[in-house]
Image (cartoon, rainbow, N blue to C red; front, side):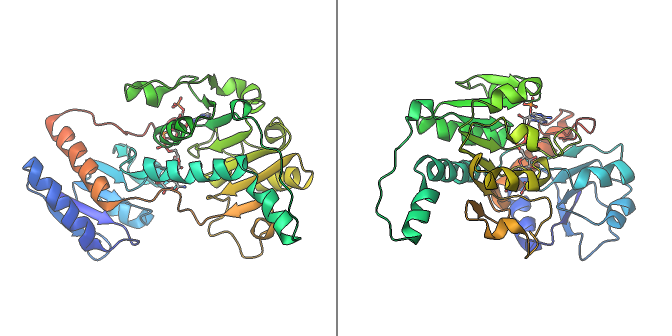
Length: 320
Ligand code: NDP
Ligand code: OXD
């Protein structure tokens, strides 16, 4: 069977070696080729991160496409246009959950311990102890409780903050699928405003879909309690940046840690860069790890070979 890898961000040999290692364990005869270098070869399975449309359109024998990341918002329109019958399969955690938990835990503690306020005091050489909120009343809300949200929520829960969540289905589906409990209230998206009113910190770990695009606008963000903190590591376009800036400037919101943006890279003159209550990282909260990703993909190919449906098949109708 032939696997094509299209990933201009990673040296091809790293994918080839990792896939070969896991193919051996599964006793599959696998040939891996570099789709960037050999665009005319036909593959059975494509493993891609943001491939060009013409390459995907030229692949006539695909049995499945594996997205080399969790979010499929960039790939799904290409699949709809050029390979509508081919299943699209995304990564499920594959080592990203722990990274996301680190990222969110740091930002929650940053907010809870009022580090932006201390930075402002330091800038004026002011020695002034500030009041610390009671932990039991410091609710951390997860908008999106999938593989990323659940990993981060578990960590925050282990840090003894109360957690709550809001999902499309109104259930902790990822926790149920993993056979674990989510120890907090879960709201359906129809109760978004009620959920937001309980979040001292809002952690956004949503996929970008038709339903989530612009979901966190002025009206929604103003439901957060005064002084609330926003962390967005899902997709930038779920949150209206100008509305966030307005609410920060009106001091309704206390600060934000942002990893994802409406436009990436964030344009050099964007006001978010210089806002004193905003921390920015360049879409690095959880990065694809070649080893665990290759192992997971080979397990899924083995499942397809057996005639089973692997996890992570994208529902094109829902967009994630
Ligand atoms: P999952 O598909 O596992 O989980 C998605 C979650 O979002 C589910 O809880 C789902 O609800 C919920 N959801 C979907 N649509 C809505 C909606 N309209 N309203 C409310 N909730 C909704 O995805 P992952 O957790 O693996 O990843 C989430 C996103 O994080 C990715 O799509 C990607 O965009 C982003 N990401 C960012 C990274 C970074 O480095 N910044 C790294 C990895 C991922 P339900 O449970 O009911 O289905
Ligand atoms: C992903 C990402 O979706 O890196 O995996 O954002």
